[in-house]
Amino acid sequence: MRRRLTRPLMIGAILVIALLILRVVLSTVLPPAAAQTATFITTFLAILMVYIFFIIVPVAILLNGRISKRIYDPIEKIIIAGIVLGVIGMFQPWTHALYRIGFFVLLASTLSFIVWSHVTPKAATYDEEEVNQSPSSTATP
Image (cartoon, rainbow, N blue to C red; front, side, top):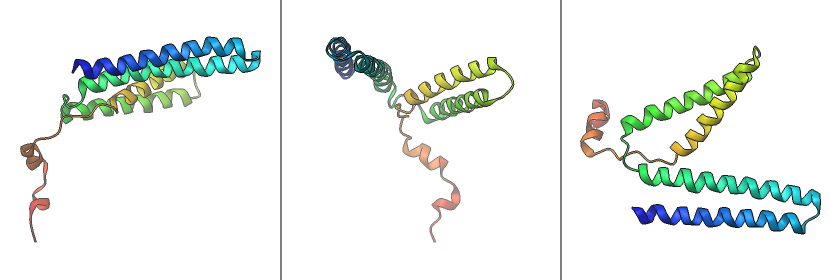
């Protein structure tokens, strides 16, 4: 378990360091306009790598197969409701304060959904599947 978590973190750290070094090198080699673009792209990719390798991967490794479907589904629905509320808050025409709140709710819910979509719920056992089946689906003609 520890090895499964350590390896992605090391890969992520190496990629982030490489991108930050590349940012410095490209900004000294390229003309100013291209250097600004390269700085933006390498910084964006470094932030993306931090999010992927230090948030998504550890959460997925630690939670995969440990959360029951009964807990997984309501959390997913709450996150989706947050996305809907964030969109409604951003597109309402009345006040700027609701727009700002809607933006942050949408941002947090979207990032949460990305993380949560990488978590696999615990597989249902055979007994649970039997209970969940309707009587008409088990009848044979």
